[in-house]
Image 1 (cartoon, rainbow, N blue to C red):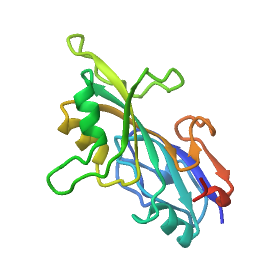
Image 2: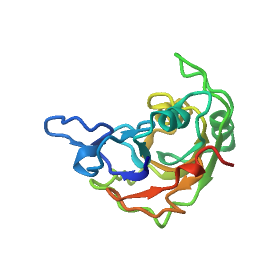
Image 3: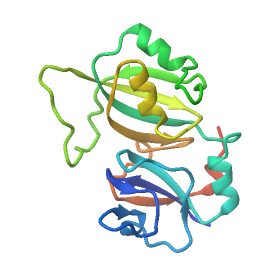
Image 4: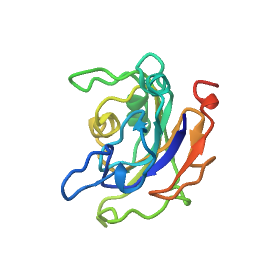
Length: 187
């Protein structure tokens, strides 16, 4: 019953089945019978957990038991105190209201790999970095949250899921490692 940490590269689909002209998990992982516990959009990067254990997959991704996830988010613009407060409070996104979360402005992570292709640069528009930690994970939620407060997301990197992080398990895009399953759900 392996638990795999994988650093999903930009534009890789979170599926093993082939998709014409698109990279998938199968291009990076050849471990039989594993499936992602949660997803990342193709245009998001970073930590993904995969397992062959259906119960563990359920425990990691079920809404009642979801592990906290931290995202490093490069946004267009500079957040003020009001926009950070709005991100942290329940935020009405139209089809659902987010749960409270942690959102802070951070310095650009120096350890972060360059994205290929690079983020577009607009000299007249500054960018900032946020760290957002939440327990829920609805479709494109972080991107929708930052847009709702006037800070469109330019780059999104999931850096941690529960007890696992790219800080404790440094992996470059496309790299993976196996970790003990006992760590899931422990605080």
